[in-house]
Each structure stands twice: as structure tokens, then as C-alpha cells.
Amino acid sequence: MYTVRNISLADYREGDVECSFMGHDEIFSAGGAKYQPVGYRFETKQYDTFQVIYVSWGELIFQSQKQLVKLTPGNLALLRHRSVFTLTCRRMAYRGVSFNAKGDFPAEFVGPAEALKATTEIQTLAKLMERQLHQPTRESVRLLEGLGRALAWETIRISEYTRAASRSEEDWAEIARQAMDVTLYSARTAREALKGVDLSYRQLCRHFQRALGCSPKQYQIRARLTEARRLLRETHLPITTIAMELGFCTSQHFATQFQIQTNQTPSDYRKQTQRGSKP
Image 1 (cartoon, rainbow, N blue to C red):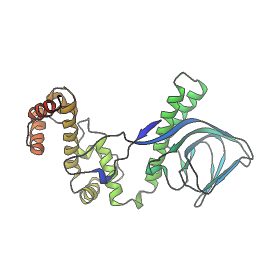
Image 2 (image 1 turned 135 degrees about the vertical axis):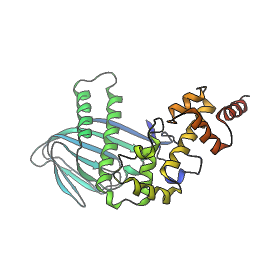
Image 3 (image 1 turned 180 degrees about the vertical axis):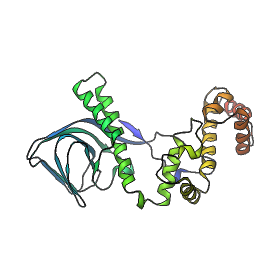
Image 4 (image 1 turned 30 degrees about the vertical axis):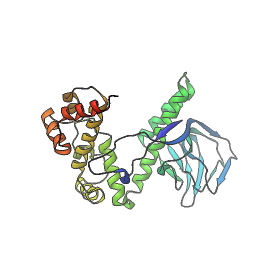
């Protein structure tokens, strides 16, 4: 079992950004091998699980409400929860690797089924999974689950990029927010953190301002200061170390920004919160 947390735009509050990546939606998942012989057929009108299949040999015919595709090596089937599709092996069997999940799915695991072409990153993940299958170790089950989970999220990512034109303003703001959340412990500026997003920085700033009421730069500072407050409360790390770890250029710059937001110095905040936590 593992837990996944999706932090939505509704979770955002001015000056109080939670930057946690764990939560309470529990799902069971597993990564492993796939093989089906000639004559195989599977059809569903409402898929009750979630699965990603990577084809490494042979061919698998995928049919959904919008696609009819012959999946050959290097292709994927993204089979979301509640999707409608048919899988068949007509003239050839197929072999590959997959990731399966059941339980309380994140929103990205629910929706239509799709056939996609694998990226270099996905091919690498599939090869690593195949190596674990061919050369198993004591930790292979856990490794296959972790690699399979990465395979699933990378597949969802490329699926989303193919539909980039239809993304809403809130979608772009959420993508930008997450890109900055995962770079809190770095010296990257907001612009640098958003460099990999498939939209110009100016457009992202406009969407972000409308959705969250602040600029990406303002959000990044608030998120870092929220994490700084947690570190000051829960650890004994030196203040200078906290400042450097969270990407502030100097401890003085950190102290200045911290006082602007909290009306306290970092040392005063630590004394107050740690003293208050004692029985």
C-alpha cells in the first residue's frame, strides 16, 4: 500500500501554502510482466481498475471510442478507471510490462483509455522493469512497483501534453504550482523552475495571477517560507542552513522575507513555537 496526495488549487491559502506530497488516498498497486497469446480478447464498458501496458514484443490491437491502433514495440496503452476499450491479439501474441492499481484513485487515473507512443524516459523505465523480471532480487517486487508507478505518471504526463491546447487556466496554474513545489529545496528562481513547462513564462504568469491571485515569484517565496516555518518548529537546523537549503541567497535575505510575512524574526519564531510545544 502507498499513499498519494494531490494538492488542488482549493488547498491554496494566502500566506499558508502546504507543500506536502503525501496524503490519505490509499490504493493498492503492482508492477509486473504482461503476456497474452494469439486469440486473446478483453472488452470492457467500464474498466474497474487502472493499468498502463508497455508493449516490448509482438502486437496488441487497442480499440477505444476514438482510436483503433496496432500497438507494436515502443507503444503504450493507458487504461484509465471507468474507460471503455477492447484489447485483442489477432495474428501475434504480445509481451511487455505493466503497472496496475486499485482503490481510491487520484483524478488523473480516471477517464478515457488512450494509445500512446512511448518517450525515451518510458522506454528506459520499461527496460529497468524487464531487468528486474529477468534478474530478480529480494527487493524486485518493491522495485517493480516503484518503477511501474513512475511509468504510469510519465504516461499520464505525455497524455496531458498531447491535450495541451485544451487545458484551462486553472490547469496551467496547477502545473506551474507543482513545478515550483518540487524545487523548493533549490536555488532555482520561479522562471527557472517553470522552464520545462510547455508554455511561455509570460502566459504562465498571467494564468497564475488569475487563478491564485499572486505571481509565481510571490507564490514561490510564500511556499519556501511556509516550509521554513515547519523546519524552525520541528528541527534544530541552524537558521543559516535553513535559508541556504530553501534557496535564499543569504541568511539576511531570508530573515527579511520571513519578518515581512510573520512580523517576527526566524529566531523569535523558533523560540516561541518550540517553547510552546513543550509540556
